[in-house]
Image (cartoon, rainbow, N blue to C red; front, side, top):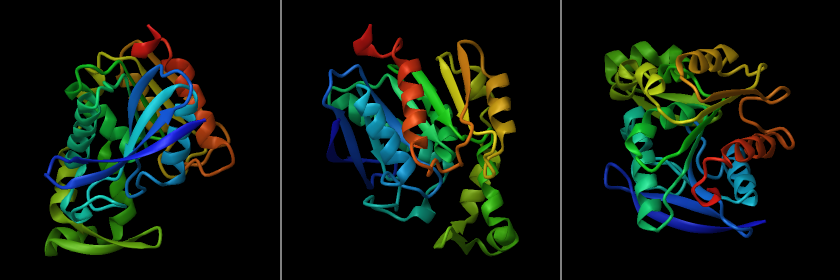
Length: 256
């Protein structure tokens, strides 16, 4: 079992971000930071279930809401992929200030792309795991394709994302266009685990193949057969977390 502790810390824009640290009740093997999917937030099933399962395995995890989501201050529409990456680094800095230097970054979906980009900015980091991550951050643009011309011509547009109306601004689209993870992955210099479902209809399995092929050893790939993209099926998120925990065990600071 684990317990949860609410925290806040300043993000890259100066706004206060809301987080939860899932703290192991078993001996702590190490600490990590989790980056959630596009607009999912720290309390989404994938984030909460994976982090709690990792904590149950001895890996304490900080999960947090990105700018303007959940309990975090600011406007989500003012953010970008670059902000998401920078806030992931800020989360690691916060953990360091709390005496919990992180060994592990875990990112789901869009958050998987973010941790691949953030990894080189966190010197104490030992390992990175992605779940259902796109190779290119601009893959996420498919969810607002219909509004793309209006966003670029008028500067912004409201779009429906899973029943939630959100504003997408031109700077967000332009930032996605400029984001290239190729060098981040090739020069990661950290052990990498890529987890992906072959039946993922949101981010295709070919993304995992490209990430894996671009990365250098040590690298691992695990097929999450039977899982959907959001890991909402019974036991799917916990299963992914157990796989990550078992793999990361050799790299965790307290396990050395």
